[in-house]
Length: 130
Image (cartoon, rainbow, N blue to C red; front, top):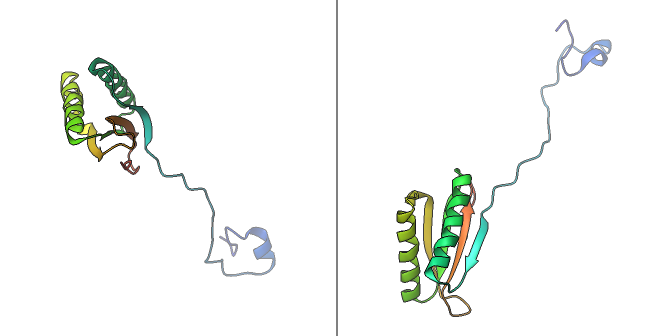
């Protein structure tokens, strides 16, 4: 622009500079990656209590439309099968979008009983590990 560099201004023009700098740098913050969030966990409960917790979980997911639900079930093979059936049936009963919830079997729980953890996983976040 009239012998001046846009980034050097009057100082470069006063010094008789005819070429502009061809390198530049900038720094800026980088947003942290999203992370999964545990919203509930429970052991052995009455089926109606589990359904109530699942209803709260579905409400949380409904308020976070970009998030996936992630359920980890611990216990014996028989306990995990029964708990998974209860959860799947309740998803269907509430007509919740099944594609938004992943159910994973975590194997035996350290205290030896059936145990369930419920998570929300935003887009771009890693899934929780059992």
